[in-house]
Length: 492
Image (cartoon, rainbow, N blue to C red; front, side):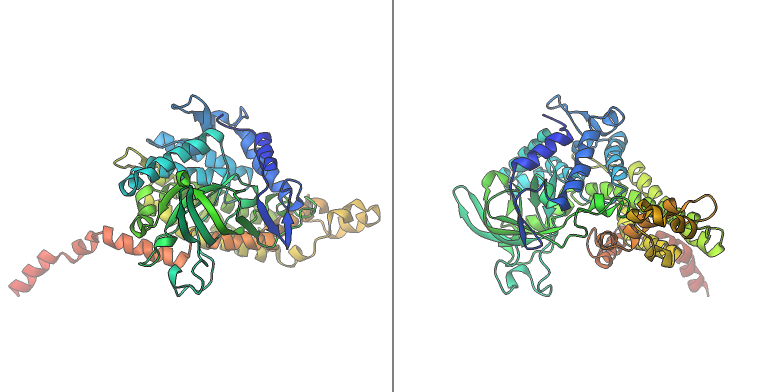
C-alpha cells in the first residue's frame, strides 16, 4: 500500500477496540471520545501531508523494494543527502505540531528502521529474531503504521533489580513458552499516544543484571491484542475546551499511559529478543536505536524551543516591554539557544560517519550535546515567558466574554496591548502563552522535555565518561611540553 491517508488512519482506529481506561471509564469508541478526537485529527493531518504536492517529494520517496511511495522515516540513510531527506519529514511533522507532540509516527518508524538495518546483531544470537525484525519493518513500512513504545519499568522500588521486586511480575516479564508464542505479564510505561496508535513495540534500556533473564524482552503487538490494558494518566483537558481559550491544549494533548500485560500471548514471529541479558544490554549500542532517533528528537526539540521562543518574543512585543534591556537580554538568550541547537543539528549531519554496514550515522557527539542542552534550554524558555507575561497571564477574559456585546467596550479599553495591538489579539496571544507555560498541558510538556531521553544527570555523566575514554587531551600535554621540561630539569 505505501503511504496512507488521514482517512485510512482513522478508519483503522475505528476498526479496532483496544482495552483503554481513562478516569475510571472503559473507552469503547476511541474516535468518538472527546479527549482523543482532536489529537487523532492532528495525526491524520500528518498522514495527509504525505499526499500533499507541497510536501510529498520532500518527505516521501519511492521504495526500491516495492515500487510504492513510502515515508522518509523508513529510509536507510547512506549519505549526507539521505540524512537531509530524513530531516525533511522530521521537520515537516514537527512544524505541523509546533514540536509539541513528541511521538509522531516518524519517531518509532526510525527506530524500527535502525533495528532492520542492523538485524545482523540479532542474527548473532538467534537468526529467527533477525528475520522477525526484518519482516516487521517491511510490514509497518508497507502499511504506514503508527507505533507507540513502552520501554520503562514502573516506578516501584528503584533500588532493586526487576527480579528483586516484591511481585515477580511488577515489571514486564516472560511467564512461559507455548507452541504458539511467549506469554508475558507485568507493566511498562510511558506509552505516549498509545490509545490512538496501531501497534506497540516493547524493548528496554540497558542495565539488566543476572537474574533478570525473563525481563530481557523485545517484541511488537497490535494495540488491541487481548490481555493488553491501556491505563491512561489523567487528561490535561476534557476535549471540549474552545480553541480560542486553549489554542494548544485543545489540539495537541498527547496522552501517556501505563501498559499492563495480563498473560498476553506474543506470537513467535513477533519476538525480537528474549531471555538473553547480554543481547538486551547491547541492543542500544549495536543497533543505532539511540543515535538515529536522536536526529528526529533533535529536530523536534529545535522546533519546540523555537516555538516557545517566538511566543515569548511576541508576548514581550504585545505589551511593549521588549524595549527594556533586561527583557532584551533574556530574549536574546533564547534566540541564541535556538541557533545553538540548529548549528548542532547541521553539524551532526555534515560530520556524519559511515558504519561497516554502509549506514550514514549523524555525529553522535553533536546529538548527545543537544540531548544535554534541551532539558535546560526549554525550561529556561518557559521561565522567561512566565516572567515577561507576569500577572497578565493570569487575568485573561474568555472568548465568550468577547462575544458579549455588553462587555466589549470594557474589554477593548482595559485588555489592549501597546499601540496597534487590539484587546482580542493580545488576549488570544496570552492564552497561547498560558497554555504553554502555565496550564497542566504546558507543565506536562515541560516535564516531558526534562526527561525525554532519561535522567539528564545520568545521561550527561555517561557522555563525559565516553568523552574521557575517546580523547587523549593532547593539547594539555603540548602545553606542558613534557620533553622540554625533562631537559630543563636534567640540565639544572
